[in-house]
Amino acid sequence: MQHRVRRLWLGLSALILGSALAPGLGAQTFPDRPIKLVVPFGAGSAVDTIARALAAQASEQIGQPIQIDNRTGANGIIAAEAVAR
Image (cartoon, rainbow, N blue to C red; front, top):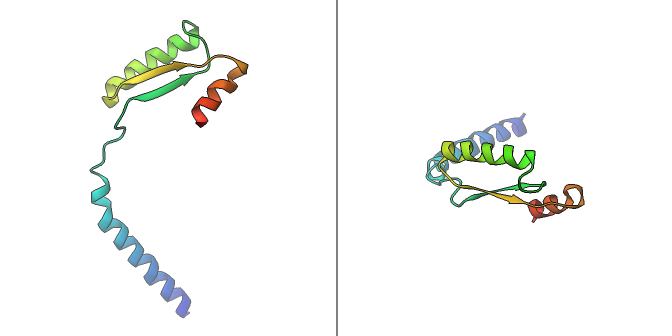
């Protein structure tokens, strides 16, 4: 029974502490630099055209530029490695 009460108090104190620190976190702007969208198909392809259209709309909505990075080859593995890095 004492363990449950102790856990309850620890949980409540963590919640109160977290909520006290949360207003400072809201001041950060995200994203603070241009976003890179990696497309695993060549420039001019249908997927690239759609990605560019979506990036233009998203860029207007979030107010941040979106750069398209075409990484072709190896059935998308090159693009996946670029994203992983």
